[in-house]
Image (tube, rainbow over all chains, first blue to last red; front, top):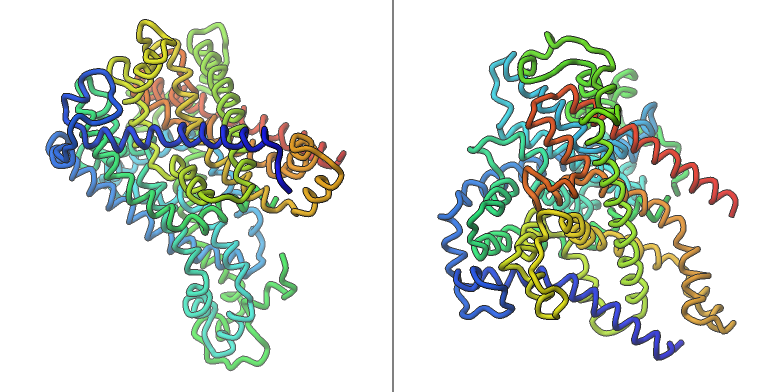
Length: 280
Length: 327
């Protein structure tokens, strides 16, 4: 089936236009990160006058980037680890058992993800303030509160993705394991989980990306000591005098790991992300 | 669901099982019945702590006079009934007028972003339906905006939109389209900036979903249509679009809800004080709550926002389901 000439040209035009639209900001980030400061202060130039890696060195001193980095890393990995553990258990139960409230739980989990974040922000802030006052804990501004919040944000998608994965693993596998004398949890950890490993990894990447990029809650629930990259970099980038080459260098460093993780696992993630829309 | 096993069986395991297991098999019956709930407990607790309880508390807060004086001790905040709602929903009060304006901006913003994202996503998905060299590279490239942390991509855009040093004005003046460099992050243009940046972030998701949807259309349909002499535009209209209808129904809703609720793009683009033209609901409620510390009013506004979304979603689902039955 060969297409008419105009179809082929239209297709090329669409693809070129979308490639330019997608790639230009990525190019700007990359090119600006290796520009000397004088290139950034005049009108925009496409090609760096000289290539310098100084922004990648200087950025650590201009803003407390290392501290932001550590905070983001701790919070994102903490949330990821907890989200995996919780979602694996929940996904297994929701896939293997039929019990009262199962459908309700699945619907609830999915619908809370569609609610406006601001709806949860004010009450959570108030709850943290009042728990702190009542118990003397310091939840507000702590990494623990952020981990708790982010792990919950990652749960809906993680649970749905894992239920799909577990459903595709034959039940005979866990039944065979249980005949051999392990309980349901033993079957989960020895037989089902290894078979669902790609799904677990996809959940990990998703949870990490969610936590790494979250802005709304971090802007209110962090203190200067626990500030994450999202908030720290944003605050710096909206100042009057910005070393844009350093901001772009920092953005690049912050983005590369998560983008690579996403692209490496795109198949598993894309399946999960689109499954809901395509199946129903 | 493809399994025919009686679901409970997974818990009871097979009939010929030695009673040596640690969990399930040897447990007394009540425990076995409670087992699913026990395993689900952590997820349930997390959902309760971060979603369900705060939502209930939020509704409660909207009925209190909760401001900087009563915030630290909310049990003593006076109950004011629906007063906050009356203020927020009164279009003649400054607060109500601001909220209504913000709602209008948010709806316009969401509709534009969803429409553009869908058109771009469909164009890319259809253009890449055809196999050619480099298709995989383009597919990967188109996913990058979605994979980037939102703050780094929006910060990059805000650099591109700087008046004096940004790329956008450099290109526009280079092409002779504008003579004096316009501002993009303040004033009227800020709305357009916000739309473009959101579309840039959002369209890859439409592309992903529509690509998956296209793959489920059997190739024979196109072959039969080609035999019948249907041209490419007829194939798009008579096969691709109708076959994508169920995918579109969900995709458009998800895109709309994400955009409507989005806080990140405007907040990172404009900072604490968004220009009036780009004052979307999330940011509007955020600002009015954390500037004035009037949390009661802020909660009432969030509840109204949720009710609006629930109503809209219900109507949308009703309409799409009805249409599906009619077809």
